[in-house]
Length: 115
DNA sequence: TAAATGACTTAGG
DNA sequence: CCCTAAGCCATTT
Image (cartoon, rainbow, N blue to C red; front, side, top):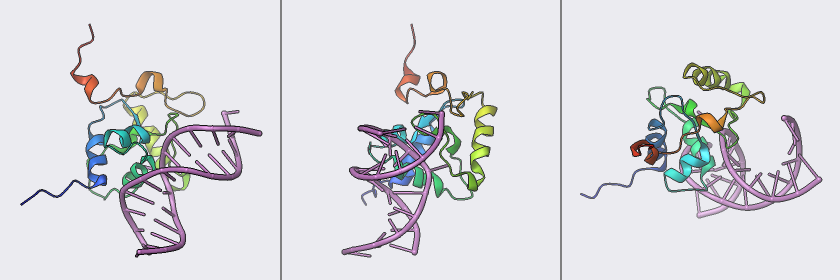
């Protein structure tokens, strides 16, 4: 039997799971990596609907400016910053991640040896 | 099947 | 740096 195509949501989870500890990716970056460069909002929707039991490091996904865009009333916004700082990710004065230091280059950068 | 929703992004002011 | 308006898209009603 032919294998059913992997749902968008599952592909998002797979990519997010691949983000190294102490690194971040933007919603748009994840969207591009799953093959839908314009589906940044879809990525947010997928992470927002994570089930209670999961192994997806959702806190490693921030917006394009490194800022946290989870609505404050969720309570998860503060948690995200805490989890990131625990991994060594530093924030600037504006409350955003310092992308110049913690943005992940992508899956392909891992295999490459820097001379 | 259509309308509404939101953890986005871009362009302007 | 903060705010608004419009465009985009997967998911939910």
